[in-house]
Picture (cartoon, rainbow, N blue to C red):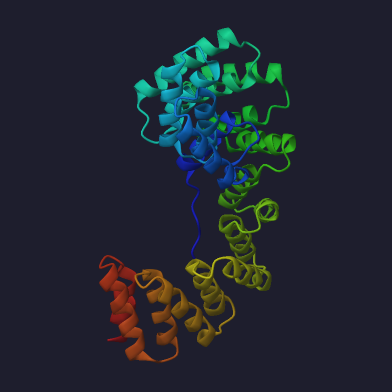
Amino acid sequence: MYKFKLISILFLSSLLIVSCGDKSTSKQITNSKKENLDSLLKLDPNNVDLLVKRGNKNLALYKFYDALTDGAKAFRLDSNNLEARFLYANALNNRAERTQVDIENAKQHFLYLIKRQPGNKKIYVSLASSYTQQGDYEKSFQYINEALRIDKKYRDAYILKGTNYLSLGNRKLAKSSYETAIQQDTKFFEGYLYLGYLYSEDNDPLAVEYFRTAATLRPKSTDALYGVAYNLQIHGKLEEALTAYRELLQVDPKFYLALFNQGYIKQFEQNQLDSAIYYYSSAIELQPKFVKGWHNIGLCYATLGRKPEALNAFATALKHNPKFEISRIEANKLK
C-alpha cells in the first residue's frame, strides 16, 4: 500500500499560527469578506484598521507574505497601534522565509506588547512560539504557562505545548496536550487531523476515530478521508477501507493513491488480480510516472503469466526511476 507521512515541520507552522487568530481557521475565512476588505483598501489604502483586519485574515489563510506586507505597512503608519504591531510580529514569526533575525525581532515586539497588555493570553503564546522556533523550550513552556494562568482553557496554549513535547520526542505528552486542546475546542479540525497522524504513525487504531471526526468537521478534506481509509486498511477492515476510498474519490476523482491502495487490497489481500490491474491502471492514468503503480501492475501480470506486459511494466517503472531496483530484480526473473 502507499502510506502517508507526517510532515511535522509544515504542521508545526500551522499550529503556531493558530494562536494569532484564536479559534478561527482558514476554512472559516470567506473569500467574500476578504474581497470586501480589498475593495475598501483600494478606496482608503492607508487605513490602519482595515490593513490589520486584512492582515489577520491572511494569517488565518497562511498567506504570510501578504500578512507581512499589511502588517509592516500598518505598523509603519502607526507604530503606537498595538494590533498593528502584533500583526507585524506574528507575520515575521511565522512566514516560511523567516530568519533568526526575524524571530528575534518578533520576540522583542511580543515582549513590548506584554508590558502594555499583560493580560493578553494570545501574546504570551505567540512569544512562546518564537522561543520554540529558537529551540528554547524552557522559555517557551514558561510563557505557555503564563497564558494558562490567564485562561486555563486556552486551546492554543495546549497546541503549542503539544508541539514542544513532540519536538522533544515525548509523544505521550504531545498527544495528551493535543487531546486537551480539542477538549477546549471540539471543532478544532487541525487538532483531530494531527492526532490522527500521530496515532497512525504509532499503528494505533484510534487514528481512525480522529480522522473520522476531522472528516465530519470538513467532509471534503481529502487528508481526513484518506486517513480514515488508510487506517481502516492497515487494521484489516478491508471492505470498510474500500468503501472509504470510493467516498474519497467522489470528493476528488484524481486522488490516485486511493485507486492504488484499492489495487493493493485486491492484489495482496483478496487475490483479485484483474481488479487490481484495473485500479493500478486507473492510478497510472492519473499519474503516468507513478513508479510503484507500474511495479505492482507488473507483479500482477507476472503472476497471471502475461510475461510481455509484465516486462513492459517493469521497464516503464525503471524508465521513470532507474534506481528502483526491485523492478529490475522482478524483470530479471522473467528473462
